[in-house]
Amino acid sequence: MASKDSIEKDRSIIRELVQDPRQTNVALSVKVGLSEGSVRRRMERLVSGGLLQFAAIPSAAFMGRPVHTLFEIQSAPGSTDQLIDKLAGMPEIAYVYHVTGQFDVIAVGYFASSNAMRRFWTERLGHLDGVMESRSVMVLRVAKRAHEWARDIAVTGDDESAHADSEPHTPGS
Image (cartoon, rainbow, N blue to C red; front, side, top):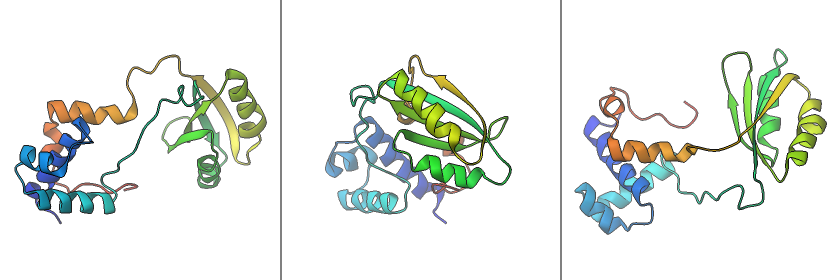
């Protein structure tokens, strides 16, 4: 188990990277007070452990898919995992969440047009084995994107998680 001090050093590196992911390890080392080699090793460990990822995140609209839709899906008993796997394999679907509440699954998709979304919903999603009920919710405006939450934490700090007694969770835990 990593020490609280070590976890905080890793988090400080991540906070700086969220602010400017293109900065060099040398610049990063100056900001976090570690050697360049230490920063490099910590980043390699964070990436290989699945705790840090680097990605280019284009605008869906710019990439030709301006229609952003959430699908709320109630699955038949015992079919949720198979349904999640099917949805995760569909190119139109960007995110699939297993959730609590009235629905079992939330899927987020991006489409070229509202007609393309309608065809997906009625001709593909509606015919998947295990779908008992589904609703669609079209996004009219995105006020904040998923990856932007980390910028807020990087700027303001996150006192609650900074003082948590548990070590960082790996994806899927």
